[in-house]
Every structure is written in structure tokens, then in C-alpha cells.
Image (cartoon, rainbow, N blue to C red; front, side, top):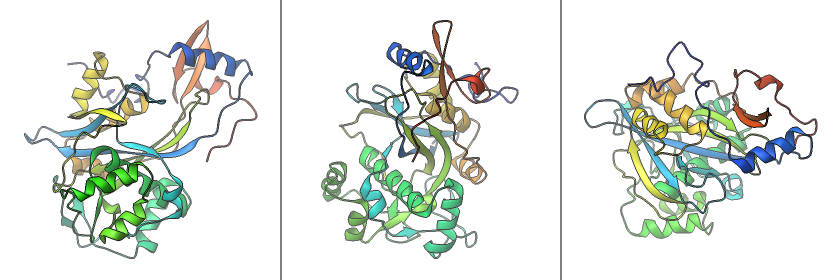
Amino acid sequence: MADLTGGAHRDPLSALRQPVPPDLARRAAAFQAGHSQPVATRDAATVALLRDAENGTGIQVCLLRRVSTMAFAAGMHVFPGGTVDPADVTAQPRWFGTSETNVETDVETDVETDVEVDVETDVETDIVTALDAEPALARALVSAAVRETFEESGVLLAGPDADSVADVTDPSWEADRLALEKRQLSMATLLARRGLGLRVDLLRPWARWVTPEVEPRRYDTRFFIAAMPVEQRTRPIPGESDRLLWLSPVTALAEHLAGRLAMLPPTVHTLRELAEHASVASVLAAARIRDLSPVRPKILVRDGEAHLLLPHDDGYDHAPTPPASAPER
């Protein structure tokens, strides 16, 4: 089988080349000629839900296929996620956090989690440090990550305390999920009504990707990984997606290379990284030492052809960036 993880001897970003769509190539040419300026980024969060395979042969990851009518990433297989909403910033739910002692097991993968501590100290400091963000933004990103995961997969990374997760099997939860999706209800209000808090210990920051400057819609996306709680189940939810899959990272990459699973470069790269791990516990441990410096792909038009460039690609440092770029936020 072909080496789908990139191999230790190769730059892990070097094999993500994909055809640049014609309309984006035209925008890149105009951008390169100085005829257009980048739009500002929007903060976003996405979550790779993980579980150990039942046969003990590695891990599986949850992928959703976005419907063909979506304005961004139509038809692409993605992790659950979306942009930070104003309510994610202004209405903050309670957090349950962890310390480094009194470890216990509570998820499907025998993931080690810890005991509740003051969320204003250890936990918030850990998340803010990992995300390299202001505390308010870090909280908003975590809230958005949990909210979008619930909206798009039915999995709620929240519980009544630091030792359990919510039971969302009651039919009344679907009405709450729809209210969240329609922005009729904030995550903070929902959790307060249900007597729940965010299980921050189930999430780990993993990466940060910024949409190329030539794109008409741009996002500053923080990628999280999360262990799938054993008490909950994913389910296909119509709306933004029309398909839900649990696949091993290697299988997903093979399907992508065969042209059967369309994916954007950040998803492909994340799957390559996840494919290096034999268990969810291994992924969570690796997340503690991740470098979350933003990855900023660029699109360069050269000899009439548009090329996607990633850090360490030849020509990346010479790709044009206009002097008056729109601010990222």
C-alpha cells in the first residue's frame, strides 16, 4: 500500500497538492496583479471526533459531507465545525476542567481524564495558552466547537459534572438542537437550562489553518480533536451535510486519493497526522505538545497555472501578499 502518512523522510505538508478551481485561479491572478485585496477572516472551530476501532486496529474519525448547495466547501468531506457566533462570545457557559492528578477513565477509548478544578485558573490558562488567544476568544472558540459538533453530529461534549456526559437520547433534545441551529438559543442558555457545563477536558487543540488570501470567504480555524463519549452516538443530521462516515484515517486518505472523498487540504493533512497514531489516547497525548502556529496556504499563478503552496513548498515565501491586507480577527 502507498505511504499515505507522508513518511518520516518527507515534509508532512508536501503532498497536499490539489487542482485549483478555475474561478479561484482567476481570483488568484487578479490578486497577484494587485487588482484585489483579501477579505478579513472569521474565527471558526472544527472538531475531529475520534474513537478506537472495535477490532483494535487503530482509530476512526467522523467525517461529514457538506451538501452541494453550500457556499463554502460544497461537497467536501469535513469534520463538524463552523464559525464563531456572537452568542459564543457574549453568552459563556460553565466549564468543567481538569488537573494533572487523580486521573480516571470515562470515555469509549479509555482516555485518561482528570478531576474538576477552578475553571478560571488551570483549565482556562491551559486552553488560552494552547490556542494563543485572548481568554474571551478562547472561550468562544471552545463554545463554538461544542455547539457545532452537537448541531452537525448530535454529539454533545457537555455534562452535569466533570465525571459524566449528558444523555441526549430524549426526544426533547432535538428541539434544542434545532433551536441552536436556527440561532434561537445560545449554547450557554441551553446548558444552563439543562444543568450542564462544557466538558473542556474532552477537547484538545490540534492545529490552526487560515484560508488563503485570494478566497472570497476566509476563516481562521482552530482544529480540535475529541474522544467520542461512549454514552453518545453520532447520527446523520440533514441540513448542511448529507452523509456521515466513520473511517480510519488511512481509509479516508485512500478514498480521497481514489477520487471518492473530496476534501480540502487541512482535512487531508489532519488525517495524515492522525494516521500516525494507533489509539485515541495516543492522539490526545500528542495534542499536549502540538505547535499551533497558523498554517497559511497561498495560491500562486505561475506560467498560466495556479498552484497551491504550503509552508516549506518551493516558492511559498515569494508568493505575493499585498501591503494592505485586511486584518485577521
